[in-house]
Image 1 (cartoon, rainbow, N blue to C red):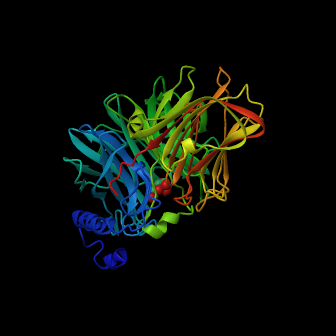
Image 2: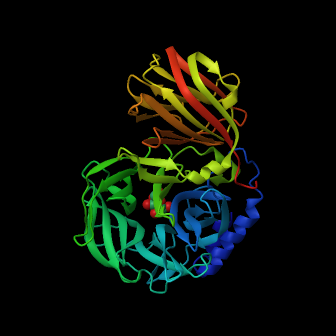
Image 3: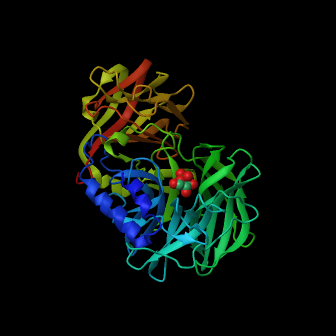
Length: 501
Ligand code: FRU
């Protein structure tokens, strides 16, 4: 395999040679991804090889850029590169050459021999800067912060002054990674994830030029129940407050990302934690990152997968995907919501609409069949006497395979049950709901060939999972146990593919 033979000249090649080699390899392999059965219609995924965290989400010279943790040479995690894709609308993506590859020497060890780990992007003086963690298994400390920049947004040169932060501060430890940089009041700020004394921490830095950074202190840390290591912190203003997103680890186990709301005092380097919640109740949502776009929207994408999952697409030479982009806002009651971005509506074809529909028992509902669809449904909870009702999606003809969405009105939960969903992770994923003032519950479901994202009550909760049913499993049932359930209205669209494959 290339990355093994690559070992001979690895580290004797400079960065652009490493980048060109990876990009050339991807081009050669791209057409060889033989089986496309698991390839998604409208989610970002790598051309070949492995993908994890979104990195450097930014709008630069009008275009959206998404970088991502990438190992092109095999569909498993390896020395991390930064893959790169560009988009005009965050929906239609074009793959670009690899942006960063492990390459550099530093002192008597290397700067990033084991990878360019997660980080962020920012524009300064018309140039695009990538700020990432150089990870080395030979050096102590193993993680330092580095910069690369580009004038065309495609070819990146690593900064000669790297590392720009060469050691973790006293409040951190050797786990010191995932810098997120933003600008506020003409200054640059950075949070870096770390751990110490059994608590996950976000370490805070300030700079006026992106190269020289001053450590300001621990801006936020775990309250004792939010993990002992914080990965991928992202701190940003959101309307009248600030929000901190992080991906916590408990020991070796990665857990569901949370969002914390509070006030940010830049002078005192303190973020007050006022309230927090899970960003997603599903299995496959990790390391989310946000950007503020030119329309002023705060948009988030997450890695739609999880460490140590079953990944059936490995046999086809690729692994990993991103969630659909979500806009982060508040609804008219001031409740935080995550909603699929408007641009996704351009994918809709083949519309079906129903109104005033009553479900008893199990009803086959062929109008809603499909493997890449959007469903938007209002259930009348008050006037339904069935305690548990919902949908079976991606059903095989004999119903041995199905992905179940249940509305449990006794426990007030929306449940995604993957027990019969096919290959991939199983499990039952539950999110709490509050009935809306009019007695209704809204579900908006994005189904793609190997994923399901469920938005509850216009984004008050979200449940994201990868599923791997057979391509022929595409039927839909509506069901209501022990009584009837009322659908006020429901819409279904097929969603077309954004890829040429
Ligand atoms: C999160 C993470 C980051 C790290 C990257 C390595 O999923 O573990 O903390 O930078 O992945 O690929």
